[in-house]
Image 1: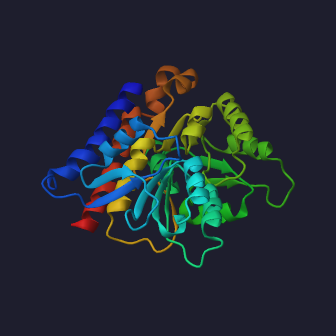
Image 2: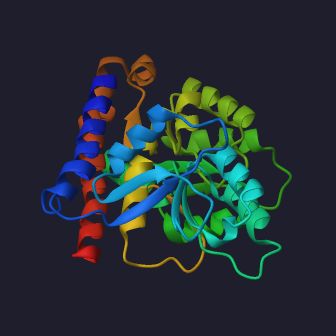
Length: 316
C-alpha cells in the first residue's frame, strides 16, 4: 500500500512539474509569491520543497510585509495564518492562498483580518478534506451495488445532501431526542457502507473513534474524508496531502480568473487510501471481491488529471 501511494504521489508531482513545463520551459516566470513563516520559524527544507513544486511558473520567495513588493502570498496551516493576520498590519491588503485550513478555522481568520477594515482582499482557503463529489464518485465506482448510509442531526446538512448525494440514505432523529450513537447503530443495520461527512459537527475525535470502532465490529465498510478520519480507523478515505494541496494552490495562483470573494475549497488534487490490513481482518482473502485497490488508484489518477486539464483549458 505504501509503495503504491508513493508511486501515485510521484506520478502527480511529475504531472504538476513536468507536464506543466513541457510547453513553458523557455518562458519567463509568470508570478512571484511570498511564502509566510512567523519570525524565527523559517523552515529551509519546507521552503525548498515548496519552491520545487511551484517552479518554474511561480517563483517562491520569503515573505515581505510591503504590498508594493509582494502582492500574492502562500501560507500553510492555521497557526501560521493566525500569526499573519494578527501581526502583519497590512494582511487585509494581501492576496493569499492558505493551505490546510478548514472553513470554520478560515471564518475565524476572516473575522480577525477584516472586521475593522473598510475593504479586504479575497483569500483562497484550500483544505485537505474530500468534497462530496469526490466521495460520491468513489462510492459509485467501488460500491455501486452497496447501500450507503450515514447519520446526522444537522438539518442544513441533510437538506444539502438531498441535492448533492441523493442516493445516500441519511438516518436522523426526525425530531426525537435520539443520541448520536443510537443513530449510528440504526444506520449500521440499514446499510453496507457508512459515510463520515466532512461538514458534520458530530464527528469530533471522541465520537468519531467510537463510531469507527463499532462499525468495524459490525463489519460495515467506513468511508472517511480526511487524514484524521483515515488515521482514526476509516477503512477507505479520500484526502489531499501537502503536495496535492500545493498543486491545487498552483492552479489557483496561475488562474486568470480573479477571486472577488473569499472562498473555501477542498483540494482538487486528492488520492484515495485503503486500509488493507484493517479490511483484511474482516474480509480475508475475499477482500479483492469487495473492493479492488487498483480501481481506487486509477480513479484518483483520472480525477487528478481532470483538475490539470480544466486548468489548461482555462489558460490556453
